[in-house]
Length: 330
Image (tube, rainbow, N blue to C red):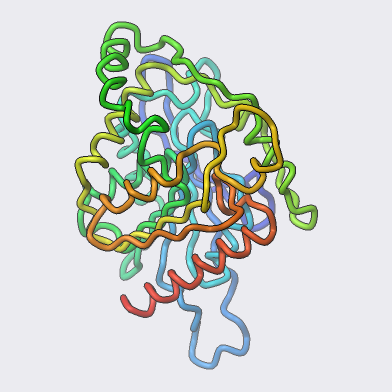
């Protein structure tokens, strides 16, 4: 395993390459990024009193994405947690020349990435583990947590992709996608992305806290969807529909409404233009016995990249939930 080295996010961030063997496209790696908490405040009389001083957070990004959110990391480290973010194989920092971006045929493949990341945290004795996932990363972590009982203490999901956008048609579409995945897994699946979600994020960006995006890792229009990958995602949706068994408390943050990205309008700057949030809210209740759903007015698909007011509300809701969880489970 390589050593920790400075990360592209700059001061306070380091990255570690996690070798995962080889596949048909060559060497496979994941990349772990860490942001360790700042020292305890000088006025602390009896050690570090921050509420999450015994917590490790592992973040997993969504489709056509990678980790770049410094502000999200600092939310956790300011409260004492150790924050880790994972660029999965063939995404972002982990993408190697000649590889098909984001391509897997089974979301359980990421068990290797996740286990490697958890093992690389350092001493985790007595520390609580929080999984934090966005979009497809939220689906991946939900499935992982259900298959690995008693290994996680809380699951927090930012607009998780728990159901297909055409939910009533998923059962009819799935067999056709399965056949295509078996015969021609690299065929491109139909998709329409006019770049409006990327534009909405630019429109709502905070000039006081600029975010730099690598367009090779997070393109204006989403990466090509292949049949093999889409089949894996639909299988995950079917598993959620049947019901998962996450034994840790779950918090799901969602926009209050969706907006179709068929033409540009200002509505796209205050709604989720990727998922049908009402369907996601219903699907979330099948994750386990303890699920909180927070609906945030004016939020984008990534609630933490929304306009200032909605973003502040998202962080306030998250802070309230996390503090309650931390106190109840201490």
